[in-house]
Amino acid sequence: MPGSVDTNRVLLSTTDAAKIASLSSTYIQRLLRQKRIQGVRVGAVWLVYEDSLKAFIAQPRKRGPKGPRKQHHIDTASRSTQPEEPYSSEYKQEGE
Image (cartoon, rainbow, N blue to C red; front, side, top):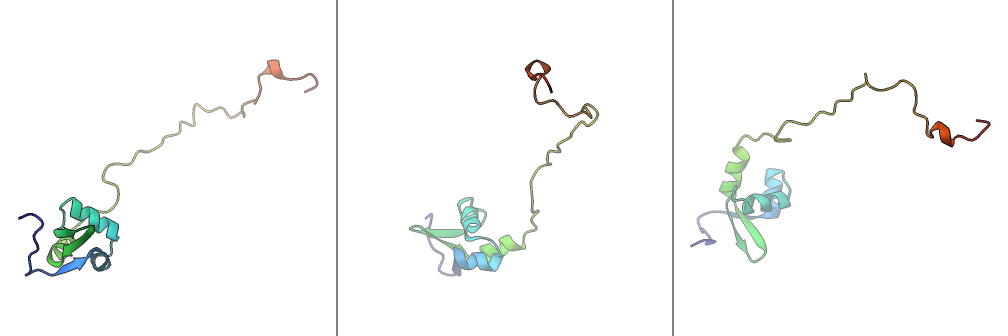
């Protein structure tokens, strides 16, 4: 039966699980929804199986962005060394 509680396993609140794993409770809840860790939902509250959390923590994880980062390249050769004039010459007033 889905959502049934295994009484032989220790359950933790998401707050306690977050402290143990050094993660946020929001991230723990996301892991539960994604079924990356096991637990049960009782009403609006998630409970995490301790052994599942410890198995997740033991897995090597790569932190940071998943893909290559875009590098912004500025073409300095095409830039003029002269600052641009804010107005074209036709709008300049006499005496400038």
